[in-house]
Every structure is written in structure tokens, then in C-alpha cells.
Image (cartoon, rainbow, N blue to C red; front, side, top):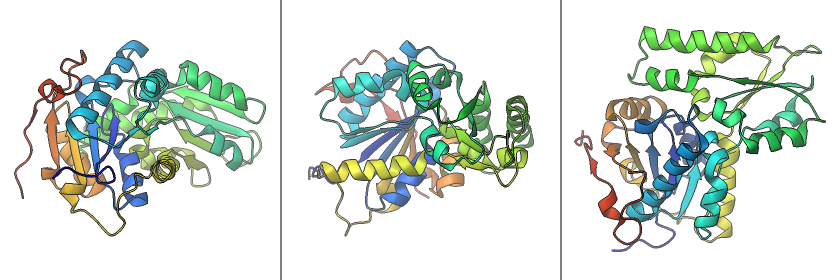
Length: 310
């Protein structure tokens, strides 16, 4: 039986497992919805790639999620992909409800008491024209300390390859966090100190423990998961696409997680951060050339390696 528009899933994608932090917020805000999450780990990290590369991946993944999974809306759970391509996706898919991410510096301005705000993110996000416009619009309202964190998203990705992080990967995340936070200056609630830290990459939510140890308990951490989830609800409601609140799908019917890379890291991350079993995860190949897009797009991907039922 063909699903109704309301029953179709919401597509969510990121360059890797970082977008699971957004998916977790979406799951809490929209408990009756189905989701298809794609981690493009086979082509990560996005943050250190050029805009053209990231845009090509974004378009290919959008086509795949529409053609193969029939998504009713798309959440681009990646700051870098949003900055590089969301304007093009809006133009090419005008009928697809679309939510993107940007570093949450607007909410941070409202929260900060010292007027000094730190922003950490990938180099691709923080050097983008989109971020420059956002930052420029708020320069008169606060002082921003912007720090690209090369390698941190990838280190966090590696640290999730096991349900319990291995010492080497955890140490790498701690060392990178220490390097970048130290470079930003003093954190605290006294005048002249950074009292609010914006997490400009979805991966960084999974390093909250390491970051908190460095900045102290009084500094506010601001991420985009909950605002994006609320915006997604508003958009679905406005377009009449909210799922029936009387239906709560079973876990593996509700959550389908796919990776273009190795299956094990996604399974471990799903178990660790979303308490989902391995059988919810599978792999897919999503070519960048878009071959077979449209009616025959099922030929452009091959899903395999779905974990056996447990």
C-alpha cells in the first residue's frame, strides 16, 4: 500500500554521525514521525572540502532520499552543506520542505551577559559567505571569537566506532578540544571573558564532556538541535504534512539509518546516542553524478549489509 503524504519519512543527512545529534532532537520533538538518516561517511569530512564538492554531494543525497525513500521533507543536518548548497536545493526542489543549519549565534547574542561569544566549527562553515553574512549582521551586538577546528569532527567520528570509546580516539578528541579552546582565550562570566560557546558543527555535541571540562560549568553551550526540530515541526504543520499523532511506529520502522561508509561506526553511534539496535542501520552507495535520477533512480543506489535482526 502506498503511504500517504503524512506517512512518508523525513529525510535527514550529514557528512557523518554528527547529524545524529539533530536526529535525536527531531525524535524528541516529533515522536510520531518516521525518519531516514543518511551519513555520508564515505565522502567525509565535508568541512575541509571545497564548496563545489559539498554541493555535489548534497544534490546527490537529496535526489537519492527523494527517489528511493520518498521523503516528505529534508533536514540538512550539516552546517557545511547548508552553507555550500541549501540555496541551490531550494531552487531545484521548490516543493520539498527544507530545513538547514547555521551556527546558533543569534540565540547566543540573547544569552550572553559579557557580550563576548565563542564560535567553533569546521573551516568550511566558518569561512563561507553565508556565515560571513550572518556574522556581519550581528557584529554590532556582540564580540565574536571564531575558531575553525580542523580535524575535530573526524576525531569525534572515529571515537564513535565502538560503543565504549577507545582510549586513543578519546585522547585525540580531548587534545584537539584543548588546542582550539585554549587558542580562543579566557572563558568565564566576568567582563571580557567568553561566557557563551556556539557549537557550529553537529559533531561537537558529542564532545560536550570534553568541552565542558575546559570552559567550566558557568559558560553556556549553544547548539542547533532543538531549534531545528521546532522549525521542522512548524514547517510540517504549515504544509499539512505532520504524521497522525495516534501512530507511534516501532523503532526500526521509525528510524532507518544509512551510511555510505563503514557500517560499524554508524551502528555503534546509533546504539550509543539513540539506543537503537544495529538492525536499524544499513549501507548505500550514492553516486555524485546523479545517474538514474527521477523515475528510475532506484538504479542509482545499492543498499546492502543491513544487520540481521537481533
